[in-house]
Length: 522
Image (cartoon, rainbow, N blue to C red; front, side, top):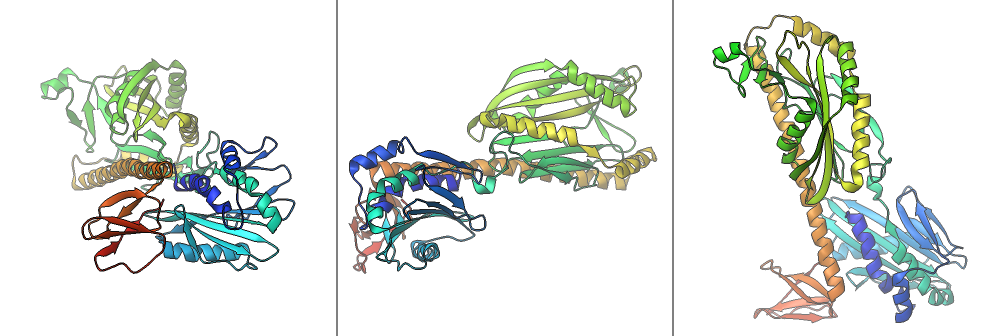
């Protein structure tokens, strides 16, 4: 759950408090009814801006694209304002929140004289009355390491209409929810909603590929020698629910075991060095389906715990396509096989599914023992995001394009004689290995950070839900940092030197033997 989704949840918790100001009342029976559903005749408005709200049939809604403010109007001068606010790199405390609330209320209706901010159910509220209109506004907020997300709510109506419209106001506020965060719009929140942009290899400019806009992209071309150039692109969605990849920079070429290698003391599992410094792993040829399965078990399992392969199948259809591509690249008579492996696992603590496809090729099956991984791509995704993952991988494979100038330069480099293990080759290989290690480190950090961030959000949501149900709140001793859960019957809390906590409804200078506790958001 994102911060904005959490704040929408907070909207439901404090909607009744907003309308139950001294300017309006609502019966317990009506409030219970509205908690279940709005009136049957209401219409659900699903806005492309990323929110949904239920409204009476004669109401209208609009959104200010510049500010993000959402305004709903009734036919009798009623108005409901919902305004998401994101304060980057700003930590909002109660005093600053009160100032922000007054500023937003003034911007919503500068003709009103708004009262001082008062705490209510973990938020702040101000009220106003001009004779012609009654109004109430509220601000709830949640802070994180990178800033504060807040929601501003404002209700206005003529006095008599206000008193008779409280059921309507509560129904609107409780029905409002974020369909997808505005910051995540078009970033894969729903199948088919992914937008793509062109991405160029940052290392050598070797290729370009279409990648999802706003996703984290890591990869490029990695040159380990004149002929050993590896390509990989890893793509991660902002919410951490999808990981897709094409290629793997840690996988190079292979050479099959032979009597000649055995006589030189080189056996399967070892490495064979070519004249330009390239290293080939000594390994028997592995068909595409087997390679996909082994890759999932040995490599993908590092990103997704508890991996279990559910199926592994040869893919003659893909083999035919890839073989034609290999022929077009000059590998006439090549032997190629392709296959896939599907699996289940746990991604960031949540059930996920994935699939990888691999094609392996021996360019000269009658004369050569060298073989390569010709294609390798796949994804890991939560169940609801599998279609997004498939679309991302398909788009990447269809748009991958090598730079013709780079290809021509690469042919010249590969054809040139390069001394075995000369200093330049060693430097090239060292730089490439460092780049590979750094990109793999970033990928691992991204996976772990995404899990940690989401876990913090889930914990915070659970804490606030528990407090809402039990009627409690959390306070912190500023001296020791110890946290206590107390009944939510006071606005100010003090601890004595003997360890007793006292609560009051009015502020005041604490006695010498008391210290004020820090109250966490409700």
